[in-house]
Image (tube, rainbow, N blue to C red):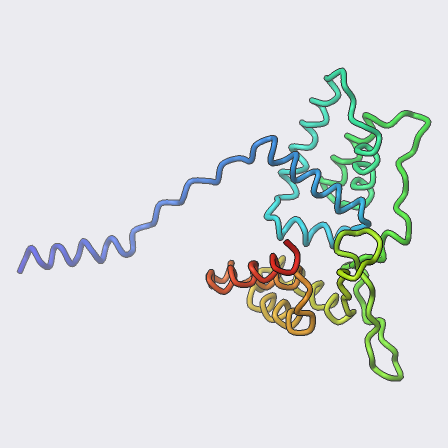
Length: 237
């Protein structure tokens, strides 16, 4: 009896003993950072806003501050080499410096300035480039008399419209802005509700399914999350 009680007491102590923290994830390689940077620059070249970029970084699980720190080191490394980056890459980096905020925007500006000739100025973003899925300006553009929402034609690839383009209603845009705000505030359940509503209204928009999958994943509903990510990949491989 004494041994049994001793074993039981030991189990109870083990239940309340602090669990060892898992080891931190490995630091991404330079190749991974370069790939992420090229993806971000491609988004900027398509006219993405800062809200668009933040959503993209969250979906890709890219840390803004760490990317900014790496970019500074990468810029110093490029400056020490004889071969300089091409003008288009520098132009996109300068655009990123204008669009992004915080450390990432400052790092992009600093690196772009290293490779920009004194007589040249980084090209400003055209107003037309902001017409594509501008989350920061996602407000209702409906007809006040009829209550109907206008629908914008948005190209997934960022190029000229084709038959495969996705139409995004203003209501879905507002839901995705709401999803981003809830996600950043830690309101995962609210983010799930917003993303779910977006998929119901716009079942052919892959970013809505991605947002729904992210919320489910952080809520521990992994099988449902995988199903959402699969659905997003079917729409936009």
